[in-house]
Image (cartoon, helix red, strand yellow):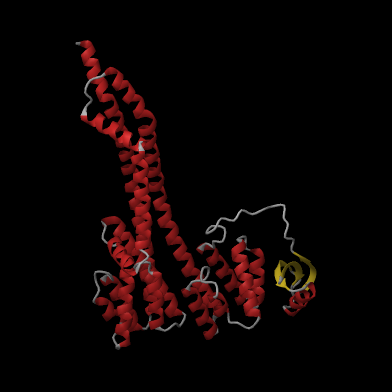
Length: 409
């Protein structure tokens, strides 16, 4: 079984490089380092016993963020453009990244490239880190001899995708936190406060107002066996829904529904268009054939309805029709602005530039929509939270007013 060795070496410019390398023996590792153009300083087996024990959480500890891939891609482009070999560049990057999983993947890619594999082929063996778009663009750069330019363009594309994802997630964080607080407050009042008032009302006797009786009935249900049954039903419903949307039919219906709500639907639509135009621009600019580009775009849009339109457009291009003509038949999904810009790009031979401008437009539209939605949700959720708590308090104190009247009478 191959062992892992930690090494310190000097490169040809005299710089110190540290990293890890797998090998059957120390002598083979030293030999490999010298073949890579390094001057070994120290090579030691990596200890399996460490004072710091890492806690690995499945699905989280081995996760590589999109932003990290973008940073590594841009650094790799800079190194390749400076004249460093891909193998040396990957070795340096593997030694300096903080994410252990990303470091492991980069080392594996470096070893594959060192053994004769193309960079795109080596990256394709790690689909959880390098997407189909990444692999295709790297392959196009290798074939065209402009890998550094393609990597720079790819880094920009990934950064835009990461930024869009960050904008949407940041907008969803506030509503999620407020709704969670509302649920906690509601459950706490139902479980701890309402029973106290219920005992007080029983000792005083009399008929309770309808709102108060409803609140007490809800409290009794939550505190009884029915609460667990309801919870099980809700969890089962969530599990069923998640499995359903993973099916082809479920995903199609769910993606169609996501385009319909007034605000959220518009945001989902603009996100899909931004991904489609940005990705297609990068692919065409890198020399990827239009049919293959549309296939990749259909995978990255994030919406099955938009993806189906792109597949139909690909079939239309096979028949000899321009891309704009095939997309014009689906104005409910592809707006006239996008169709017209694509048509101008096809006529002038600058389709990639036109698509890049459309992508910038929809990136700005997404950010504006998110800002407006956040500005609307903040006061709305505050009002809903206050109204919910206030309604519960009023329901609890309604009987007190009746008892006060009885005492005065």
